[in-house]
Length: 250
Image (cartoon, rainbow, N blue to C red; front, side, top):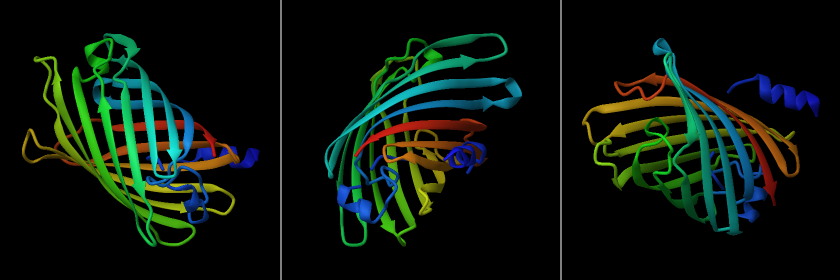
């Protein structure tokens, strides 16, 4: 077991959720986007916004998801952040996220829909957007084999109201997942994400995340998730690193 933990934390390589019946298809709980599993999660993260300017954000996010049944869940995410520059350091509460998700299982492909809202709860301008946002998303999961699955999804970010002096939000994200799950219950996932800014035509970013994780026991998992800006004229960040600890109630 110690070897598994060391392996998962030293190597660098989402989304919530499938019906319980699908655990026969994907035996790593909560890994596929259409897999509904009640869970509690703590995720410390570092995001290097501009390495040349020594500008970064450290965040600890507490996440809780409750699955009513195999098809529906609700969630809340509460981030505590510290924004750091050469001249200042600001810490406090970030923007809280609330969500609801519905999934439909099929013979070969599973589908899902999620509605998320971001509340302007940040205690400082640099810790949040200053806008009340909604973010609907749709996604599909295809099981390639017992050990592999692929997923694709689109999420739209849109601000409804908020501080007039803050920028409006209107952009989309296309996301692709490819995951391998080993019988010893560790996994690796590739997660390229393409962002398109509809407020500024032609502004786009390609960001790549990857995840390496392991089930510590039947109800606990650990993962590490690095990410890097790969291209595009919209560079929201240089790179990031997330480490997650998740408790699952199956």
